[in-house]
Image (cartoon, rainbow, N blue to C red; front, side, top):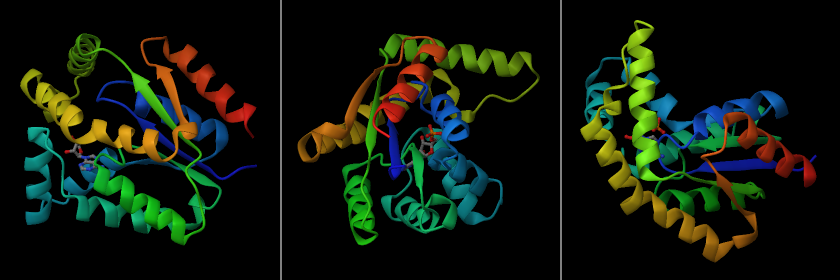
Length: 200
Ligand code: AMP
């Protein structure tokens, strides 16, 4: 079995979280969602948590330094030794370069960058649907799932995160696999499983 280090890349609402959790169960690989890790850190309620919450609620990115350290420590853990799924990281070229350096030191390589494509209008519709479903269930929607903040998250994605893809296309184009994120959840899942198993 190859070292399954896989990046789930794409705009907010493209299905990265849903698909990485399926792939995590199927291939028994840890799902490292930086958004989930940060939301967990926000629950602490101390000053640092308050600062994090403010940044996340505005749709901006937290500092590279913080998130790079979190990932560096996490991927050194035992459960990551056969691979891991990155969902929401790297989100800037600084983060992608830092990841490259960490992996080089560990003598490891990224196997795939799954690049999810979904149009902005569809992403906005999905966000609204998700927020309404949560309200219907009596849950509180994410603070960054409001229309204005979501719009900002898309802008931040285009400005700061999209260049990460350019970085991988330039440095290791063969690992980038384009995924049509508008297909059904099941179809996308089958495509991902096929890519992973075909190359195992
Ligand atoms: P997500 O759940 O991936 O949509 O992330 C929610 C929020 O967490 C983002 O809008 C950012 O504020 C923050 N965040 C998550 N991952 C990163 C990252 N790799 N770099 C910077 N900020 C991040």
